[in-house]
Length: 74
Image (cartoon, rainbow, N blue to C red):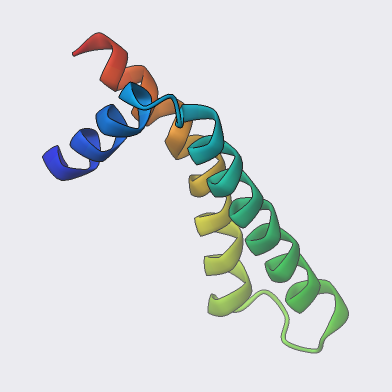
């Protein structure tokens, strides 16, 4: 966890906080759309792969906000 906070701190120091958030947000949205596509457009049903893709996508949308918030507190 310390390494992740160090990377977030370095990104914030160089002013790349917005870019970092945007990239992770874009990847998160793509994963959510991929999981929804597998779930709704195929005969898979709600199995492990679509559910995992959607959960990881939501985590990638939320993680940068929480990460930079913790970095500001420290």
